[in-house]
Length: 441
Ligand SMILES: *Cc1c(COP(=O)(O)O)cnc(C)c1O
Image (cartoon, rainbow, N blue to C red):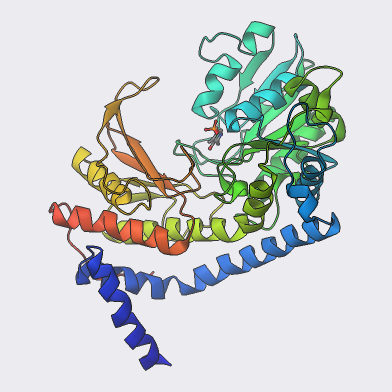
């Protein structure tokens, strides 16, 4: 068995060499593949559980070929769309779901959930610090046309404590007679706070409901789906929101978002998405249903592959002396990995390597560029089948200290692995790192 493996290893290296990976980089990666086997095995078990969860929901709802038929126009009686929403509701264990191509991205799904469930005079609370960048304009933290603020919805924020824990005293004080909805972001996004486990989200929701039972708890679940065997809706969230070009689309959904939750809250969202009186009844699926179903079916394994890539990268780069967030041994609650390179050259080389590993646009060289909304140049690497899809292997980072690359995705573990090896190869070639002997944790 061992010999057999070794021969296959030689064969495997031949093709890596043909793709520009040196023996030293390859062997360095192989050592970590071996070391990380028990963790990868754990991730496979989570994927197995989630695969069964998805399968069970599809079987229960008798998913059939008819559900893949396209509707056009108003989309009345779109059986595939309505059944898909029931499948999502069953997976997330919620009363209802809204899963639509008309939810154009994650921010849009969050906007619909918020605008539909808040009214003038209500207050929105974030008890986990500053939300994701795009939500600043949505809420009106940054002055913006059409924000919640413009509609008379106020906003309060309680930051996490220094050690990343919840500031329960301040949260209690912040909840008042106007507080209608609490938004909890699971993923750290592009911040340095830790990502919240579903269990911790549950503790927070329990506390908030004790303070004020009528408050709606919404979780921004972006990048978190299928990383654990439970979702925020299993621990009391009234609304769970995410993007289909991240985890639950499995790389196949070409657009879309989802909102799962309480029947009443989902009805509100549907009336906001289309129009009062119309709600869920309209919204043609335009032939996208099959990719939504099939992507959802693949999502648990795709997420496991992306997670392996994140942990692999954390370990490889941590051992080379870079600060990685989360670190190589921490438990995972989303698929984002940050690596601080400490120099623009390091960050740029890393992104070049990720780009060079892509199935699409591998011949393109990413360069730092001025982007709207950023005060420094930003470099981005993405060679994706779906534009901007970040369940596909992608990386970006602002050219400013600490020169951190944020990377995520990989439709398969093998591609994620190759991307990371390629990034390391690029760094080695530019003389930015030397390969160290492996330290066993
Ligand atoms: C990606 C993301 C969003 C926004 O999603 P878009 O599809 O980019 O609009 C919101 N919150 C978090 C935590 C995200 O990761």
